Length: 181
Image (cartoon, rainbow, N blue to C red; front, top):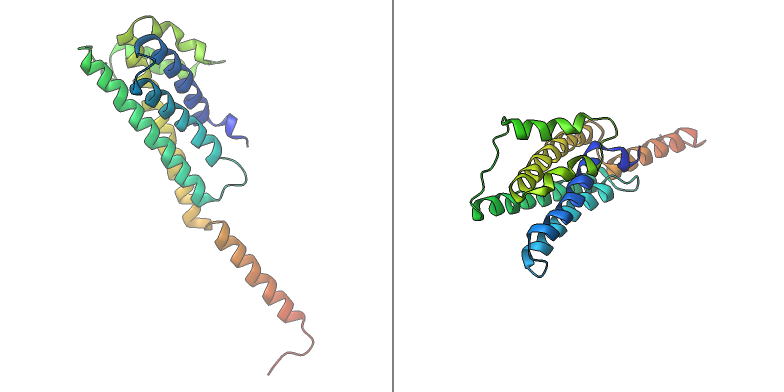
């Protein structure tokens, strides 16, 4: 399965695109905050992609998904800071506006464009991003938990190779014509 089909990656892509537009519209392009927010969003997306490639070990995948999760947490803090510093209200997760944003994820053919109308005002834009990040974090938490469970049951790449090597040694010894006594 390609990382591009992961819901966490899809959500991360929406967050990245949304954040780029948000920052271009509401954060001074020359500011460090602008660069850091865009980079945190990019880091979340890119670490999911890198961690979910076929050549990555389970241990490395868990690490990279943890980095993605941390990047989104950093970005979440930036959006919350923006609301607080501008004296804007942060939506409660059960508010109608927040519920509307959260429901968009269930649309068929969901794309970044589904969220663009929320960029018109800085308060709704930041709150929308917060909703998207919470959803991505939820997905990443589930993905990480699933990988941890798989890792515990099956071990990592190195352990699997070691088991296969030991089995091969046993097969070679059992075929050896002169067994020691």
